[in-house]
Image (cartoon, rainbow, N blue to C red; front, side, top):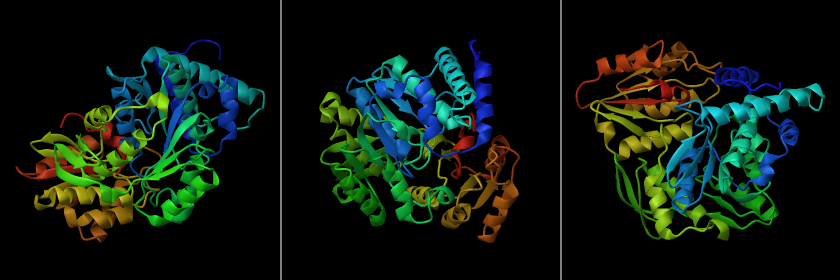
Length: 431
């Protein structure tokens, strides 16, 4: 492939690559990057793994570094609200997603390298979409001359495509929970061990865990790799105010965040700890940390998109996320309102447990099937709600239809909560 693609061809190429599914392992990724002259070796990274909170923590860290005058690359997984948002950078002028020109350029380069790699039989498998996109991101960050990249793991850690990076300044592991058990293991210890696979020799590790078993695994790996180890003590955090407009809290200093929910305060504490242990070339002041925490935005995570009627989008897609969603609804006294649910979920998720956690909160539910090979059929999900005691269950062909149905059921003073998968959040539109 020698000629430059256009935007449609580039998107179609990635869409076609996405049909190969997930195929963990680093050999293809390493070989692909060799054909691209190893752009990742010319960049520095803050590597972020974990089950829940990766996006929020990464948003906080990125915002703080931008407040400190840095140009910060950001690799987001998955893209939710626009196809190109998975590759972006942030500086003191705001957030910039990859534009068509650079997008086409990096897709064309990566596609050519992948095809040459297979043609020369350096690898028998074409790279997966995530591997292609990760390589694209490295090329874009290099072109933008980013000072540092906040790099989110896609799945797991040890064998994730992002784990080819070597110039890591900090390894960050957010709370580990039971998710992707078929791939990562069926115990919290096995999953934590996979997440801890991103730890590099001598590179400081910062974590916050809800489960002592997960923390023990991560700490043990850090000790084996001679890494400084920092764990957030959530008892040191004092919540002053928590509402639909955000929160104010104390964590060795007062901070404000526009992200809603007590769990976002905990995520902020992890990000603050990270920013207090940055290497000298990235040092930020406490004032810059406060500014960055306050300005950080992470869409689709208990995001209030309408007040009348009240409509909330939340990316809860596993039992831990469902518990966080329930906790936030209850602490904001929203459970005193009549709430209507819209849910769609992937079939490889623990959706029965999610429904069991959330069913007491909702008067009724509308289920949908996410547009993905992994999408759980709406009728099957509806049956799970019925088996858990929800009598008012409906199904819809798409998100737009589900929203209209929920609105018809909703009266003034009530609320609608959309959750289950980030994949359909972009389709909500203007509510």
